[in-house]
Length: 77
Image (tube, rainbow, N blue to C red; front, side, top):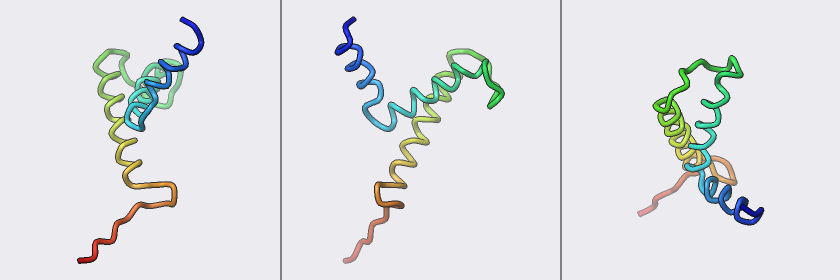
């Protein structure tokens, strides 16, 4: 696999906030055995659950905060 294909593959995994959140959650479960930050069993269910939890948290925070701070809409009729 050459470098341009590898960079494209990594870019596809991290192209949106939910995808990035999922892979961060999976990474944190993966390093779980090397840290005392949290303690979870190393099984596929925990990888999936914590990846989804991290993805949902990223989605909620991206909808709450923007480049200029807290997002808000004023609806005037």
